[in-house]
Length: 152
Ligand SMILES: [Zn+2]
Image (tube, rainbow, N blue to C red):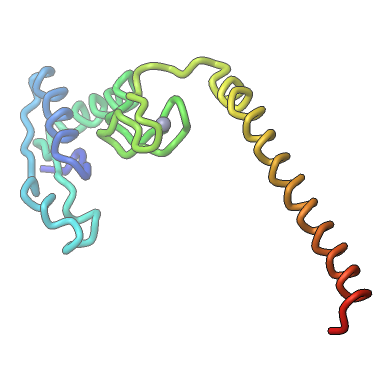
């Protein structure tokens, strides 16, 4: 009885179990309770596992490969479609930008975003550059003046 699949979250394993069940393949879920021990055990050893009978292994393997390769994007580690952040298997919502995997980003999202933020940021930067410049010039002039008129 070989192990056919394992994943860090039980949801994914149940999903794969479902895929197999729909094709009439029985499977067993093992180590379901070990998920709570992640942190105490090496990460790979507390993944939930899916086991099938030897006879079913080739079919089960093909089905799982197909399920992982096809539309089921969330069933494998992937990247956020909007910001490109790496997402673990089973997560559809991006931890970084909150995008929920399905919707592809508008093609010009990045450019548009930068174009909108930029003028204001540039204005603020110019404001500070001018003021710091004036402050430095003022300091230098004051020092020159002070050196001439006061004895330090
Ligand atoms: Zn994202």
